[in-house]
Image (cartoon, rainbow, N blue to C red; front, side):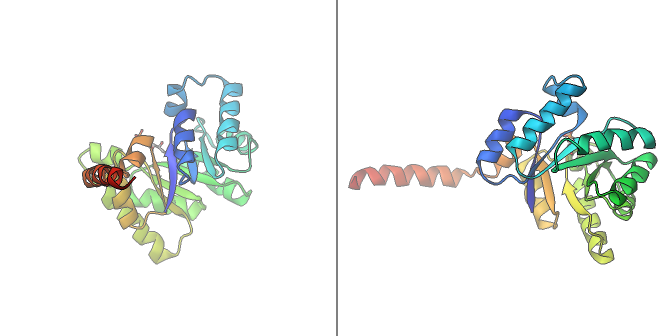
Length: 217
Ligand code: E4P
């Protein structure tokens, strides 16, 4: 399972990348706004910087919602770097655009997926990734992880090549469960990734080892 970090914060991207386990980055308009990135030039420069930091797929989201505009915006994003994956929302024009990008050799990540039906359409259109939003489904009283399992199963049965990218991760357990269900990728903020490191018995065990080590040093 690939690990993407879900942020536009360069310090956090660096911290995850320095761990040596990072395979890519996802961003969205809210994450870019959070970092104060404003204006077309600043957006492009920010994506360039991320692409230079991390050797892997970097999702850059379009903000257009009409087919022609999505194509124009997506082409400009894809031209920034060979590793850019154009992130397209799950809407009718988005699906048409994903098919166009697929036919023209541009990789896509279909975002804002909340159902198996949407995931089937994205796969048919040739998306490289489908992003079901686990946390937001959980927030609504449904079961986000159940959707991951359902999509993984459908893609397996149908032989679709689209990769299931578990998104809207809120905690370390989401990452573990996504791995158990066969998600191909998770995208997570830094904290849940670092949460995977933690276990109280590790801390207790290490403290004891270090204490005993003093006896023979
Ligand atoms: C990633 O591609 C998504 O944009 C992101 O995971 C959404 O997460 P959120 O629900 O925490 O905003």
